[in-house]
Length: 284
Image (cartoon, rainbow, N blue to C red; front, side, top):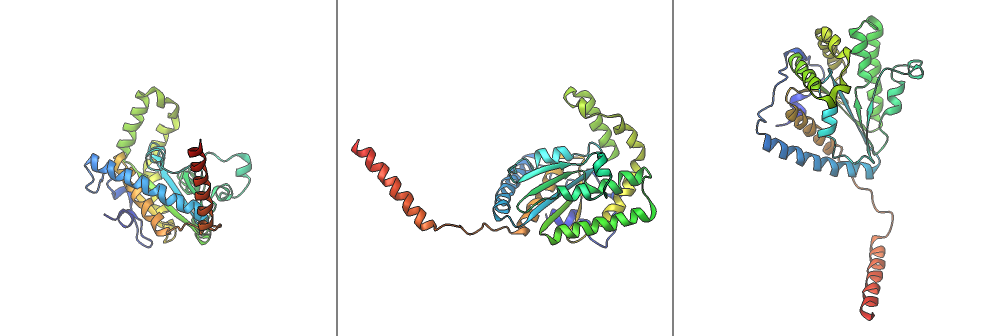
């Protein structure tokens, strides 16, 4: 199955996330086969990342958005763990600092964008400015519409600089969210993740779904597509995200750079040195 095409929000076609089954698994119900495929994808991602890093010409931006407990951290831990940290980093966006707030809303985001040869994961992103701020009435009307346009222009700039962009909405049901909140309450090691806003924000669930609909429909473009990932089942979520990332990285077709030295000459020197050491050992 081609997850890239099946789960992509196609430009010009409206999507309503409220009508998408968050428990969908696309027939991947055999956990053993799923885990095996996920491991294959992890190995392939590492191979392709090595080429992207060595080529030092392209970059990859992975955007993760979700409701609270939607699985952003879990996706990073179980899908992107295979990446070499030398060429991959995760960037989170919290409440803007006074310095960040004194600039336009994309200032801090652009500064965190990937450089050549790098893969960057945004754990939440510039879309918070048209999700949280929209839901709570901090922005509306003409200013809100401008932000969609600014976001599209920003992502087009990144794309023109050879950055491949993948944006994932990890879509869970309201019931699944409550279940995961309960699991956090039962696990002392996860108590630090609990906040009062987790529960108060549930009152705005329908407003958030409307906000996601508008963001996805306004900002899913050919060069910066959105993907809606059914995420009630964590294992399927991980598989779907990994499949899409691998396909995108293969489309990037990164190539190893040509050597900067005469390999034949270096090889000859290597064997001369190795043979000399063997001879010295025999004489002893």
